[in-house]
Length: 350
Image (cartoon, rainbow, N blue to C red):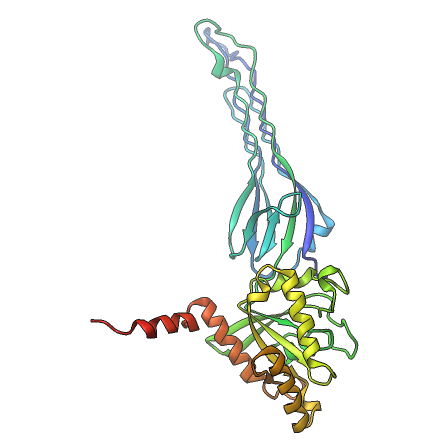
């Protein structure tokens, strides 16, 4: 299935049905009168977040969604039926933006969330509502109320707990395949990953989280170089980022600076997220070279990187455990360092 994370669509709620102009004309009933029924309400437009979807590809082939017009009223005070609603089913994590593509109207961040986007028009009154002592035979009825219409943007931000960041060919897809059951495309050339991939990491029956692999960033991505920063939105909701550095390249410190600069330039809090730094592809390095590269990274990043290999699996469980700890902090299952410090300073009081 093709991945699509943005779509512009037109939505319109249904018009209300018109009221009826009708009079009773029945045998043996001398005092007839108006009996026109009301029109039915027009259909609403709803949006629902459903599980099992991870793309907006359905909205590539259909961009116009119109709810049904309410049925018109009829004689004998028969009211028209309401028009059928339209329900837009979108993946969890989809945002609804105004036509300017900047104003966020809704965030469908929970499974089963159902929100009404546009209300259908009210049905018109039949002539039975207008009868009175002065006008006992009204010959007019109200038309149905017009529906609403709007152009909106749908933007998908995948729901993941941990994101993978790094330069092209840093080994992110290989790591994702080693850490989960996901099978992303893996090749020995840059930009193998063209769309985000999700993988579920199962550490135990009760320890599970979702990890997202996005296409590699290059210098100038915030200005549109390469694939740009289009897919960074899919890691905005993550608890932390795993920053993979290719240990076989010459300048590992420069690689770290490049990615950090792009994350800071993108904004949206990515630069402040907890970063788990990892030196990847250590299976191709000698013990001496491992230590040299790790020391070079530690000097520029200020912390010791973890040593991993997506091919051999070395260091992968330890890295996943570190990521799981950050996920639990975000979920509030374990206290953060600041919370633990406050508890320690406060001490116990009777």
